[in-house]
Length: 187
Image 1 (tube, rainbow, N blue to C red):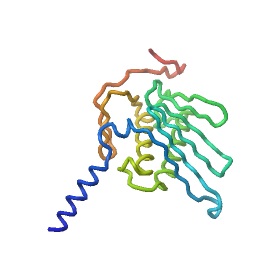
Image 2: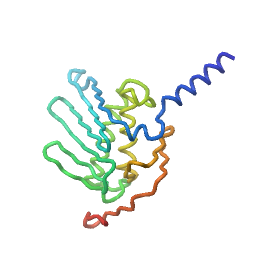
Image 3: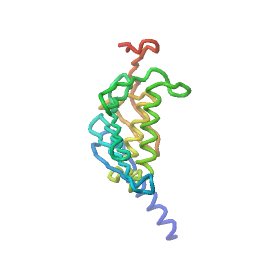
Image 4: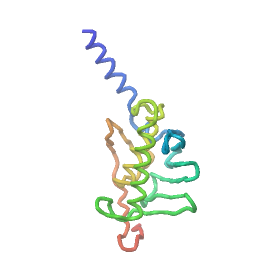
């Protein structure tokens, strides 16, 4: 009987800590995750993610002098990434990244790999708690994947419901199209 009470309490508490409604999309935060790395743990890798409104800024410092900075505005068409390491380079999505090798797909895979390997693995806390470092990194990961991979352009005033890693949207697609040949947008 006490096991049943504990199970019910655990399920209720984990549901209470999961992303409710638009909490992930509407939240603003800054999170920093660092860990020791090659060689022999002498160097430190550091991932910083700042989400403010629709902008997600990702800064990855690997080996002190190698820095990469990305900016992803999840509310802006066309789907694109701003890579700001040396100068600001805008990389637009033209094709899906299933079997296509393009600058956009390579950059998207780099962002995804950095967040997975340096954020989700090393961040402390529970991924379903938006107040923990792991929850903030996971929230950013969900938003970036939906925008860059699934072409979902987020809008304020739309209900985005995050349930167990899935996203239910009660809105329509923007209908924005990019010409594959020229890269120009169809307004």
